[in-house]
Length: 141
Image (tube, rainbow, N blue to C red; front, side, top):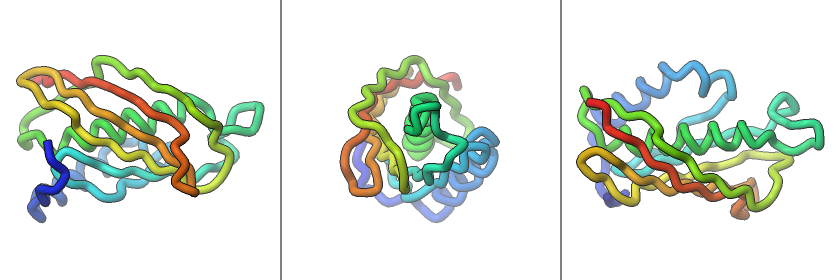
């Protein structure tokens, strides 16, 4: 998969419309940024309601951002009638996120006939790597 291949306007519109139909992403206030073939960038502004009791962003919020970013990287490589779901997610938290705008950059590493592997890196507002993940999705249709 190469992120250098631009999406057609129709593909980008389909992806942005799909994002609008993800209520959990709206609950967390995740924002869809740039999408390219095999890649997606999502953002999240740190807010008090996303913190755990020690004042850092809850790990579940980061995992949700990672999973959503991976899903939208995959959507760029699917036909309109194809669907997938997460098979696994291995996430390494490297440093706490405490404030600012968080960015998740997802890229498809390999797209097989059934299984797709995706790498996601999460950065804080200074572009310091805060978490890294490897996840896989399975094609359902």
